[in-house]
Length: 173
Image (cartoon, rainbow, N blue to C red; front, side, top):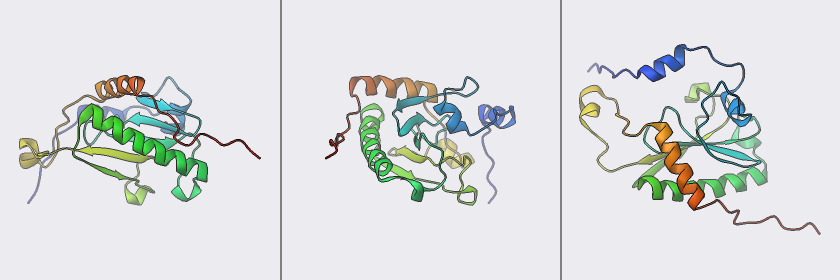
């Protein structure tokens, strides 16, 4: 059975528009004016941003500040911080969007579906009864919240519930 698809004009414009030179996540890291920055958290190791083209409202991306393309390149400190941020932003997503589940994962490499080489972890909230008329008719999803509004709501919640490192650095002996 052939399925027709809804057309996202913003995504098409994004695909067709001239791209800035360099990695999009490195440009976000560097606060380059040519990219849309929906980041909701920054520290010396990671940035958390709302996905500009989300699968669901609250779809977040967590990426290291240094450019890497493979999870095996994470340092122990990065692995620990990523775990802390993942747990923290799951709590934030629970507060902001009240999902009932999550898809969490990587697409590592173009053949695996990665459209950006810079490694990033997806946190995708899932909701009850997500199937709507658009899913049934066209086989596509309807986004119910604009990503900039998602970023605003998450930033507001982060301000009210700041990230605190649960494992402060221990003084060296």
